Length: 109
Image 1 (tube, helix red, strand yellow):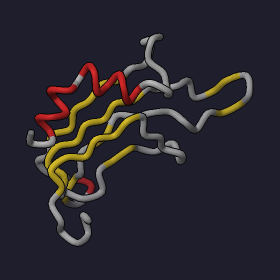
Image 2 (cartoon, helix red, strand yellow; image 1 turned 30 degrees about the vertical axis):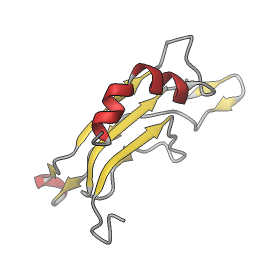
Image 3 (cartoon, one colour; image 1 turned 180 degrees about the vertical axis):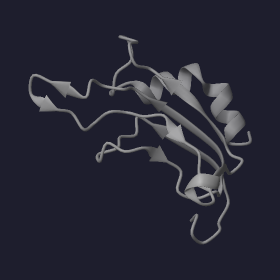
Image 4 (cartoon, one colour; image 1 turned 120 degrees about the vertical axis):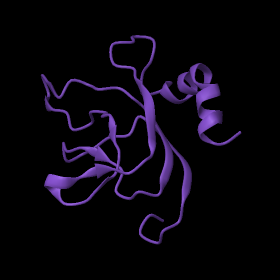
C-alpha cells in the first residue's frame, strides 16, 4: 500500500518479530499512527540463537543516508520485557485491555 501511495490511518503490531536481526522499520511514509506492543526475548539460550526477539518500531526515514529525516508519523507502543504476567500467548489481550484508549485514538474512534 505504501508503494501505491495509499494512506494508512493506523498500523497496530502485536509482538512482531524480525528474523534477520535487523531493525523493524516502517518502509513507507504512508502510516499516520503506528502502535507496537512487543517483548524482547533473550537473543541466546542454552539451545542456541533465538531469532524471535521483538523490537521497537523505527519510523520511515526519507532522504539520503547522511541527510535523512523522519516522515511525520506517530510511533508509540509498549515494551513488555520483564513483565512476567505478559507472554506471547496473552500480549494481544493484555494490550487491548491496558491500552484500549490509545488504540481507539490511533484508529480515529
